[in-house]
Image (tube, rainbow, N blue to C red; front, side, top):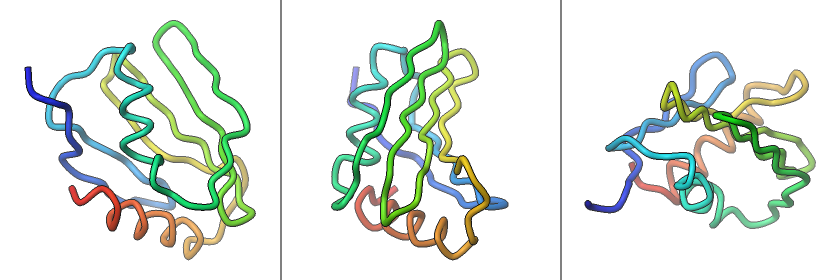
Length: 103
C-alpha cells in the first residue's frame, strides 16, 4: 500500500479541513499529524487527547491556540480554534499548511 498523502486542504468559515488520498486507520494518526504540523516552526503541542475513534491535538502557534482533530470513523480531519480567532489568523495557518504540505 502506498503512503498516505494529503489530497486537499480547504479553509471554510474559519475552519481548515483536510482530505487524504486514501482511507487511514487510527494507528496512522501520529504519522498524519507529523505530515500536517511537523514542519511548522514555533509550534508548541499543549496536549494530545486520544479517544475510541477521535484524537485531537491542542497546540499553540503564533500565540494562538488551535486544535487538530482526527475522527477515524468518518475519516475526517480538521483544524479548529478553541476561541474566536480573527479569520486572518486562521488564514495565516492555512497558507503555511498549503506551503509546507503541497496538496
